[in-house]
Image 1 (tube, helix red, strand yellow):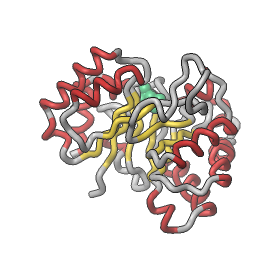
Image 2 (cartoon, protein in one colour):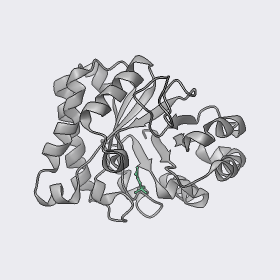
Image 3 (cartoon, helix red, strand yellow):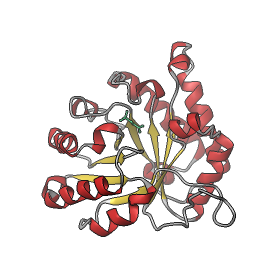
Image 4 (cartoon, protein in one colour):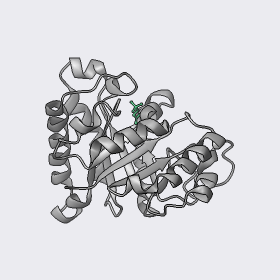
Length: 245
Ligand code: PGA
């Protein structure tokens, strides 16, 4: 059976102390994570502490987002050079929505993570309105079209996250997700060689929790999950891991 990755996007759920407590609990339950790959995206302010406390080197730590400015006079910004990380998330729908990040900006960020050879999760997904209008696939294709301008050199993951599912408890059927992942696959096929494509992973994200992860893991195209709320609660994480074995 293929190894599933759980990527925990802690958003702004846990402060530094809460992040440390979570990681201490992880350290005590190390054996339970033998069969999955874990990535954690804490608040940037907690990354150093999380790395110091974590005693499991197979867990990757990443940035939830970063600025296109590398250094200099950019008050309040954070760049991929600010702190050493294994990976990063780009184009999360909350960034696209609240911070008005467009595909042009997202491409700039991708260029930076690509140049720095940092594993990257690129998020794509349609709104409820787009789904209802029957243009979900067009939306995904247009979000993926930025990849035409990039010779990808890094381990890339595409996270399919329908916006109407994030934080709502509303999860698409496995058939719907499979169909969207197939669309993503065929878009990638048109862009990259077979070798590059086989290294690109596909995740699903949106209201994943202990009640649905086992069923969702039946989707054959999936390599893992990008998990928000449920991944910030330790008991829920343990329940999700247990329901995967
Ligand atoms: P959720 O968030 O699991 O809380 O729905 C997922 C995400 O935003 O990546």
